[in-house]
Image (cartoon, rainbow, N blue to C red; front, side, top):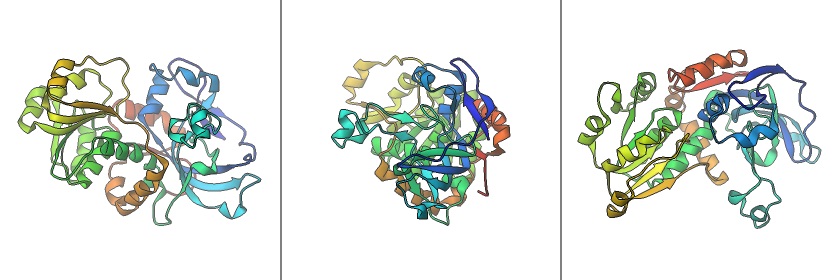
Length: 344
């Protein structure tokens, strides 16, 4: 089967032809992948930005962790009635052996492996995953929209971390898919949402099509000129991964406001800590969502399929994945979905 892999440290990814996976071991299922999304993590891995050195030991490894598909085979300890079940998959696999896991504190597992990072992922026709990481999909949910589940759980966690509430004014920095999803879920909470980007018209246009009005591209203006008239913000959520934007936007956060970081940054950010202290502001980090929140996100996607499908800008076969990587890198893509097997 064709697979898109990271084969060595350094820039680049490559296609390889692999044997199909062996029958799944105990506790695991073999998923036939229908759709898989390209995300910022995949771009970071392809470009080999700092922070992914730990995956060298897994190379060559198939990328891809945002997926939908159906169970094709089950491990020897699992019921064969699971075959055919439509699922999406939590990509973070806990070790079950560290002190945190043994204390039933999976969220603090120190031995995690990520699907598509530390073990083979979904940019291939078949992928083996723990059944415990699978979430059943409703029959009404299309597979292309279902592949948005994992990134939307990241967005939901960010909105929860930022404590977004009705009638707040929220600034979202970065209109990539994570920023878009945060904007959607913040609006769902009843907040007034402002989204800012730079040279990001295709992605801002996607938000415009689903009813967002306060969309700012700083290509032709300064950040201060763009956001000052709308400030102060009750919350700011950074999803751009640009360190300089943290300190640049903190002055627009209200007293006791929350600044939440979601973007992955290539270097440290310099922050005016004295101002932060005097304004009683907080900076929080947000990453993965707990397992118990996944089914709520699936239900949201099922109820808002037309809106969420409007944010998928590119649908490509696996063989054209590198075109999808380029579109995501160039920011001409809102969201790239690879259609690998079956019908979405």
